[in-house]
Image 1 (cartoon, helix red, strand yellow):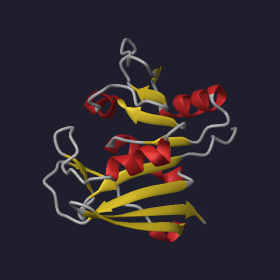
Image 2 (image 1 turned 180 degrees about the vertical axis):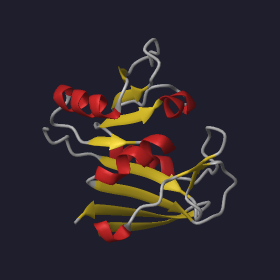
Image 3 (image 1 turned 90 degrees about the horizontal axis):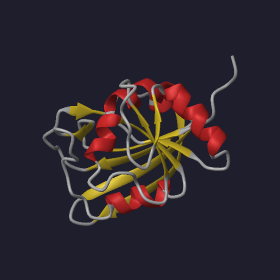
Length: 165
């Protein structure tokens, strides 16, 4: 079997690994979404259907959007549509070979894809938020910390960039 293209995961979470609450982000940390945009701009972003439907303005601008859905009739406007993560990964890599690929959620897609992610871009919100969607547990020992950035706006948060050993 051929090796799949390399990809990264990017996520923000609170102290308890909460990433969402009823399909919404449970915090408003000034600058956190700007950080997400800076990292993912001009890249491929792969997301699940619920994540896509939670975006207030649809497809993310200045990115190549891929949406996964098991419904063969589902079409995410302005996006490439796929039934499986592997098909999205290979298809988007073939279409945009020079661009980095990021998995941007949701929880099921993170859980499925984290085991082979080359890089993790994790923002830790320094708060405990109400939520019902969690980022999967992962082993920090599999990664080297490449970069760390601290932010103190209306909320404190820290960005960690890990690269697989």
